[in-house]
Amino acid sequence: MKDTQIAEMTLRLEKVKNNAVSDGRDINTVGLYIESKDAPVANIRVVFEVDGAAIFVTSRAGVYATSSNQDGFVEVSFTSTKIEHVELSCFIVEDKQNVVFTGFDFIKIRDIFKIDRVQSRNQTLYYGEPNFIWEGASILLHTSGGSGEVEWSVGDEKKNNISLVSDDYGSAEATAISYFTGSCEVIAKDKVTGETSNHIFYVHNYLYPTKNKIGLQEVIQDKDKRLLSKSALKTIYDQWGDLSVYSEWLPNTPYWTSQYNLIANKVTVMNSSTGIFVEEPFINYGEIIMQGLVYRKSEDDE
Image 1 (cartoon, rainbow, N blue to C red):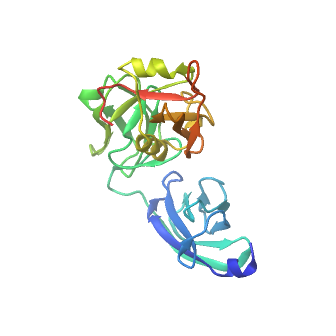
Image 2 (image 1 turned 45 degrees about the vertical axis):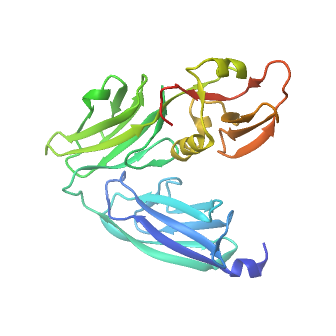
Image 3 (image 1 turned 60 degrees about the vertical axis):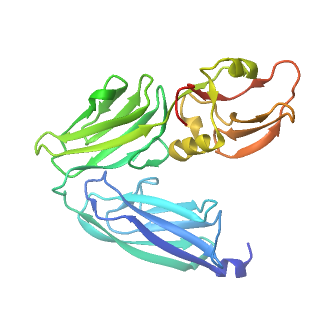
């Protein structure tokens, strides 16, 4: 990239989460936007630095290098075991003079107990998410505040559909073990203070990813198998990220959407590893075999 192009770039930091507890587990999070002439710039190498006792979650050090995504955005998190104010900086590798700063605080253990972070293996989940789940799919729930002694449970309606495994640090893993749709409540209770916090998510579709190749005619004729729309697969990738890290999904594989045309011999597929959609041709003679298949039950509401 030319020096003039680099010089035109602007960096903007945004505090996503501040005032983390100084327990070495809770995190502060910052977002970085990289723009040139008001347009996002992708694939720009940047370095984050934070002082004090803070370390980045990914690098486990006070320095972390990464690149902007296609939206010109980077999000990083860091933690500390010390009650302190820290300064965070970020600069472009090819232009170290282009640097921005902001401050964060790590505080003593809060009085308020709550579930403050829910995530899949790849992505942060928000209240109401995930909306798509499958047998073996797990979400991680983390609490902050309170005594640190936490008891976990699932609401009565779904207690037989979800298994819970907790640790000694106020976190738990909730895993789907059988079919369900609708709302599901995971409840955290502080054993000492009696405070409670919950995370409710609403499942539109219980999914059936398969590693076995299957013929299109079988799917068409089986009324219990329904291919997912492009928008549904996009939501799945947005919430679960790279699906290849989950054992139930095939890596780097085109998964069929419901957008296919037998006359034109074309289908829209999503790559399980990248989340990229493409329209590709298929050979329409003999049996049409799908490499990657995930389907939902016909009674589920997409």
